[in-house]
Every structure is written in C-alpha cells, then in structure tokens.
Image (cartoon, rainbow, N blue to C red; front, side, top):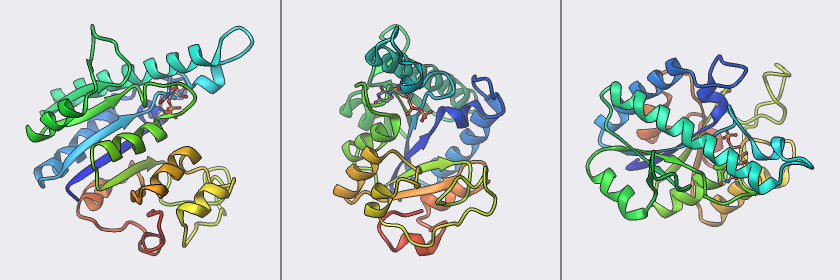
Length: 240
Ligand code: UDP
C-alpha cells in the first residue's frame, strides 16, 4: 500500500482512562508501529476522533445546540491531534498536524497541497477537525480525506479483531462475520463498525476499508504490506 489513512477513535486514544483523557502509552505504541510503516516507504495520514472528550450527539440538549456540541466535538479532535503529534515528534517520527477546524494559534489549517507537501517529506499527517462541519463524525471525515488524498485504503482501528453482528466485548459468543459487503454494512443496523454515511461514501467510491485491532503488534505493518487480516472478508467489498 502506498498511502494509508488510519482512523483512530478518541476512545482508543483514551486507552485505560475510562473517564476521558489521553493515554500516552497508546500513542507511543502507535508511533512505533507507524514508524515501521514509514520506513517501508508507505505514507500515512491519521484521522483522530474526539470521543474521549466530547461527542456532539451526547452533549446536545435543550440548552446546547447540536451545532455548538459538534463544534466542541471537533475541538476535542484538535486536542487529541496535537497531543498525538507531540508524542510522535518525541518518538522521532516526523509529523505534521493539519486541522479542518481553524484554530490558527495552535495548528495549521488542512489544505490538500499542504498535506501532499508533508507526505513528500516523509511526514505522517495527523488530521484534526473531522470534516469541519457538524452532523457527521470523524468516520465520514476519514473517508472524505482518504478520497481527497487518494489513499489506497482506510484502516479503521477497533478494539476487536473483525466485524461482529453484536458487540463481542458485551457478548463473547457474538458471531464474527465471514463475508460483508458495503451494502450489507450500510443496511444492517446491528453492524456498527463505522458510521453509515462513511460506509456509503466509501462504497460509492470503491475505497477499501480494513478493520483491524489496534492493540495487536504488527497489524498496521500487515495492512501496509497489503496482507488481509481476515482474508475471506477481503474478497467481498468491505475489507475487514
Ligand atoms: N464532529 C463533527 N464533524 C466532523 C467530525 C466530528 O461535528 O466532521 C464532532 C461530532 O460531535 C463528534 C465529535 O466531533 O461526535 C467527535 O468525533 P467522533 O465522534 O467521530 O469521535 P470518535 O468516536 O471517533 O472518537
């Protein structure tokens, strides 16, 4: 794979901090894996979520407008992105942070040309601010930016090793899917691997998605090498 967009949720960046927050150990581990991929000659963008701090849909109520809540959510992705950027920098991984939400005192605005320029200098591009617009999530941002940046694949990090019909953490006997297409992923309301708008856009544009377990060493390298983590799913549209 030449260019990969990694989507990491805020919950994953929060690691063991169940109350919200940022887990430096998770970030360091990620920096190490990403460095290996860069050394293999691949380019990588990372879209970070913000759910460890704020999800707009959970904050909006009769006193807080959804737009304001989503803006707060996007700001929380900026927090994750700048912290992750520092951890990468200190780990010796060249990085640039670009944001679709303008916060000029602390982060550069995203532009297509800036991102390409950073890629050409072998920098990892961390993307903040999702799409810059309310009513969607960073999953949609990940697909939009991957299309814009002509990424070969979107790798969505999860806590588990595939796609299940129920949450396998809540139900250890949950059935792991052997085949899954974009269409099934969009229409089956039990499948919550990525938000439906994002899946629809990926399907329309034939953008492959790999679902992988973040905290399993070597998974990101496997994706960069084009190895399928669950081969049967890879043949059927949505790659998992
Ligand atoms: N958000 C938004 N527009 C975007 C991306 C994110 O309004 O394009 C807001 C939305 O409120 C969302 C929050 O930012 O709940 C955090 O993003 P997300 O829920 O995707 O984070 P994750 O679940 O991946 O941690």
